[in-house]
Image (cartoon, rainbow, N blue to C red; front, top):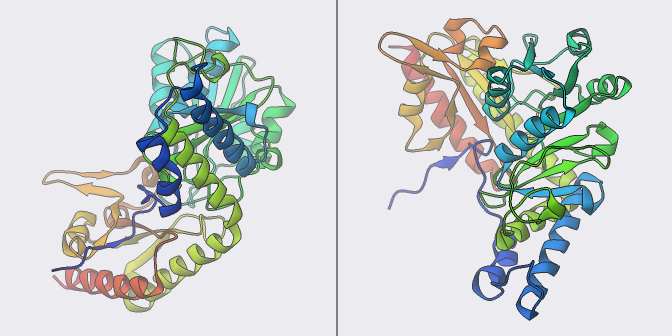
Length: 382
């Protein structure tokens, strides 16, 4: 039987950590009670939710009462952005964001524009990095929120969050960051970084899909996003998804305990892959993203004159990766991130993202390097 492809799309989603599965199992099989119930069946589920909240808070270095459980990163972003703008009471309110945000931020901003609010989309440089000076220059008297991602999901560039947080704080503006890609890969101490709101996505962290969290600094007011009963201290209605919350908590505990070792492993596998491809492919390959300020696991590379979907077709049975562009019969769809970075079309259309994870082995990297290099070489000769 043919082996499964080597998985190099950890930025897309992660497999569940076996310890996460073990922690969740009792709350799937036995402890089914509602944690809001006052009777015996609610006791253990309530304790589990309290423990998980503390585990998430420990990873972010905040207090448990600053954590709100959500259905994932998308809900956390929606809650943070819409909640901050609506709670400000300003009509129109003004938001500052960047051109390279995830759609879970950009689409929310576009919704706000349709509702009569104003949004400024600051540019990035060729490495995908925001200039804090551009953020500062974009601020208006009615700016109520700045939302800039911690690290980019496509090219891995880490943004200057501390500087932007300082700018926001000096002006009394709420600052939110989408940290879906950075949690568990680099330090995410909210007090060190200085943000007011931070989004967490469980499935990027070896926890299940459908669970996330929002860090909400004490004193920050948000308009409620989910209306109903009084769960999450009235901040997010809906019966708690106990098993999934437990899984997120355990994943955060593992990430905190092993952060430095995981960072080293991710960097090793990413760099081996980059070096191996570079040695084979030379000047027909270029790196996207910042060379130093980049997630340790993320490798976005472009191949001149080759279509990304052709590469993925060639390697698809052997290596799982994602594309930065989609080529059709009459046009090429290049990602908004590569467009914002002004990557030339001859390079951008041949962009793939390879992202390693905790389970990636050095042997897998060696085999993947050979597979990708052979595919690109064959396509380049056609």
